[in-house]
Every structure is written in C-alpha cells, then in structure tokens.
Amino acid sequence: MLSTSPFRALEQGPELKAEDKLTTAIETEICSLENYLVLPDHTMDARIAAARQKLGSQAVILGHHYQRDEVIRFADFTGDSFKLAKISSKSDADYIVFCGVHFMAESADVLGRPGQQVILPDLNAGCSMADMAEIGQVEDCWEQLVKLGLTNDMGDGITPMTYMNSTAAIKAFCGERGGVVCTSSNAPGAFEWGFNKSPKVLFLPDQHLGRNTALAMGIPMSEMAVWDPFQIMGGNTPERLRKAKVILWKGHCSVHQRFLPEHVDKVRAKHPGIQVVVHPECRWEVCQKADAIGSTERLIEVITNAPRGTKFAVGTEIHLVNRMGKQFADQDKMVITLDDSGCLCTTMFRISPQHLCWALENLVEGNVVNRIKVDDDVKHWARVALDRMLEIKVDHVPAAAAMVAASGRLQD
Ligand code: SF4
Image 1 (cartoon, helix red, strand yellow):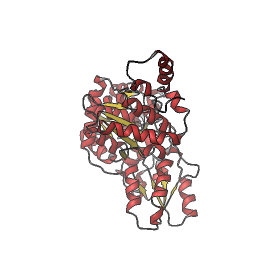
Image 2: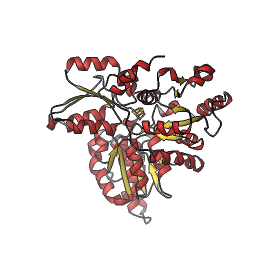
Image 3: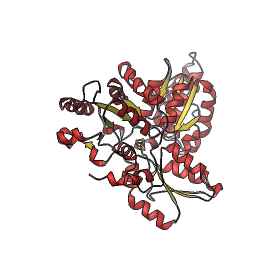
Image 4: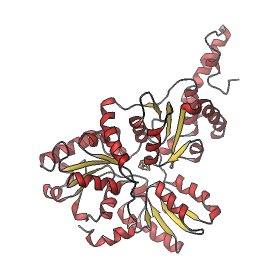
C-alpha cells in the first residue's frame, strides 16, 4: 500500500535499496497534483494541519473572504484584498501561501521583502475582472489620450488609477505615470488623491467601483465617459473625453454584476424591514437602492455592529454570505444573499483543499510549487503605486443616501 505521505520515500534519504527504487518512483509520483485531486476533501484536513504545523512561522496562510470553508479554516489571517495586502507587507514568513486569486498573490510578491516567496495553490485562480484590462490595451488608450492633449506621459492632466483587482503590469503602468492603486476600502480617498494631482482620472478596470465612487463624490454621469478597449477611441468622441472628469475602463466583476435592482425590490417585498448591503462592484442602479455600500470588510462590520434581530440581504460573493448567515444566527440576525441564484466566484473556488495540501506538503519538503514572481522592472513601479495606496486612509463609498442626494445630477 502506498504511504499517505507523498514524501515518505524522500524522507528515506539517498541510501535506497534496489527493491525500494520502484516504490520510490511510484511514491514520488504522488507528489504530483493529479494524485491529490482524486482524493476526497475530508482526507485533506489532517494532512493540511500536519503540514501547517511543521512549517511553523516559516509560512503564513492568507485567505480571502470568498474562499470556501474547507480552505479558509486553515488561514492564519482572513480579509479582503486590502487587508491581506497590508498583512502580507508586514509578514516575516519565508512563504506566503495566498488562498485568493492571481492578482492578490502578485501584490503580495510586490510588497514582500527580498527572499520571501509567494505561492498560489492553483495557478488557474485568476480574476475575470483583472483580465479585462490588458497592458497593451491600456497603453493604447493612454497613447490616444496623450495625442488628444488631455495628458502628458507623466500623468499631468489625467491621474491613472487602478483597482487592486488588476495585474501587476497595470499597477506598474499607473505607478510610473504618477498614479495609484485603490481598493474598495479606500476608493473615495484615492479619487481625492487623484484629483489633487490632475483634473481627470482614468479608472481601471472596474467601471462600477469607479462610477459608484465618482457619483458619491457628486460627479454627474455627464462628466464620465466609458472606455471600451474594443472600439476606436474607446467608443467616445474627442469632445466627450475632453468633458469627462472620470474615464471608466469598461470592465466589471462577473459575480457582482449579476445583482440587479429588481433583486432589491424582491427581497424587500419578501422581508419587510430588511437591510440591503452591497459591494461597490455592483452596478450603480443596485448601489443606489442599497442601505449600505462597502468592501467585504465593511459589510462584515456593518452586520457585526447591527442590533440583534436585524435582517440583511447581502450583495456579494456567496461563500462569505453563507458564512455570515451561520456566524450571526446565534444573534438572531438573518443574513441572506441578495440573489437567490447565488453568486459564486468560480476562480476563487479553484483553490481546493487538495491544492492547499499539495502546496504545503511540497513546502515541508523544500519544494516551492506555483510561485508567483513579478518581474523586477514591473515590481518597482507596481510597488510605487501600492505604497501610495497604503498611505491613503480607509474611506468607504458612502451609502445610497449620498448617491440619491446627488441623483439630480446623475443623468446624462
Ligand atoms: S469576485 Fe469578481 S473581482 Fe473578485 S476575484 Fe472573483 S471575479 Fe475577480
């Protein structure tokens, strides 16, 4: 029978007997991911815990709130991308095992100290929003804005600003041109920072976070333009771009964009008095109807601080909503999803207990698998933009009331 440890053969050292060699070959095979993927989830728990214990302070496991329970229970720290970026930037661990998606692991590598290694248990855990802004497309957009005379290459005229949910190359693009990264926790502060520098902002890649933040600041729709990378001049006239204070990249989160205003009406009709709280990646028609808007950290805070018995419909990823539903049940708080059909981040879901176990057991043996390493030239400017972000205070997109107050000026 094969050992439950894929590394038993390796532990035997180099002095193997001839009859052991065949076993060694077979057992070394077990190190391959394919051999973990066929094992049931429940067999992973003890192995993950054992590998975690062996690694001790050498490793830190970070878990994004959208991870499934079977994975997040092993995280040393949980949080949204902003909180996890801050934690990873202060970590002394040699290995940061990031149970999140690719752009988060990239940011951890950019912010990490020399020699620190970042591991993403499944390299297929990407982000569809981040993929919507490719560096070549953004460079092309910028070139056209420069040609129109709206900015120079250093960002005097337009502050390029990217949401955390973007590739390191896009972050570096912004950093090099005097721009900044922001998260859903500090987007209003980042906009203020951007407007202190230049009269316009180019916001990448999430049009919804950009629009919601701009509206909350009182910028009307007529002073916003959407840049579609698949159209000439982003689908705009030069006049439209000249008039725009905010140019929004045409990207979105496939999870949060699924929430619709009718979901808000439906849940309120079914549960009178329910509070609707949503993530600012939701479309503005949804945010406008919500009682509160916030990053995942903020949504958790709002629900935590509410009186017993409060009911919430939450517009964010389903794993977090279900977890909060269980967590707050003993306080008589009802926490349900805003959309019954459930909004799952399929890429985040790719990180399975099997992937985590495989990454950790390899680390125990000194094998670093799935390392995320950002090129040095990209790293430099991405770090500049991320460091600027870390200095901006947390300042959430205000609740619907502020947006409704501005609604007289929202129309085109
Ligand atoms: S929830 Fe949306 S933005 Fe977040 S990782 Fe998934 S696809 Fe990307």
